[in-house]
Every structure is written in C-alpha cells, then in structure tokens.
Image (spheres, one colour):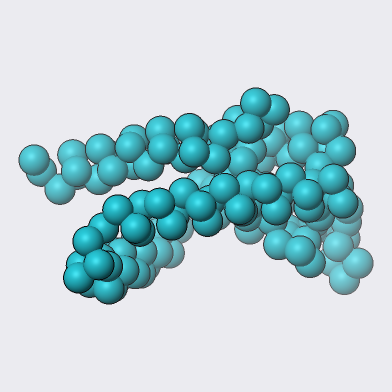
Length: 141
C-alpha cells in the first residue's frame, strides 16, 4: 500500500470510529469536532475555519446551526470589530463536556488495545506524525 493510500485509509477509519464512538443524534461529525475545538475563552471564526480546514462560509453555516440550537453565540471582538468571535453557551459547555468525555474514552480504548510494551513508541510516533502534519499544513497556507 502506498503512503498516500495508507493516509486515506487512516483518515476514513478514524472518521468512522469518531462517528460511532463520539456520536450524538443531534450533531454531525463536523459539528462534534467544531464543538470540541472552540476554547473556553472564545475563538475567532477565521482560526476555526483554518483549524477545521473549511472556508469561512462553511464555518458560518456550521456555527449558525450551533447558535440555533443554543450551543454557541458569536459577537464582534472588542479590540477589532472586524473579527467575529464564537463562544460556547452554558448548554454548549455541557455538550462539549460530554463530547470531550467520549473522545477521552475512545482514546483510552484505542490506547489500551495497543500492547503495553508498544504504547510509548506508538505515542512518540503519533506525536511526531502530528508535528509533520502540522508543519505541512502551515506550509500549504
């Protein structure tokens, strides 16, 4: 299997596992990932778009669904009125906590399925892999 094919298979498997393990009948996978990405202090829309790898109009649609459901609000930044910030509501914080708990449980299940003697090496490799992906992402923008 070529490395590109392996990356695609890894992405598809990870998405499927997330969809089943971290699922919520009221949320799509992008909404789940978005809710788990917004910081407690609020996050600007442009940063969210970049993190999620979507354009600003797609991010606006995703955020608008969260707002309609009472899970988020958006407002203009106090120091720069051109910047739109997104903040989680109290209801959104509860949902975010449930999502984060499911992500941690899912991660622990995967981690515990790795043989104990390989766990540290797998963590090092995944950390290095994440660093390489982040570096490539920065270079591509």
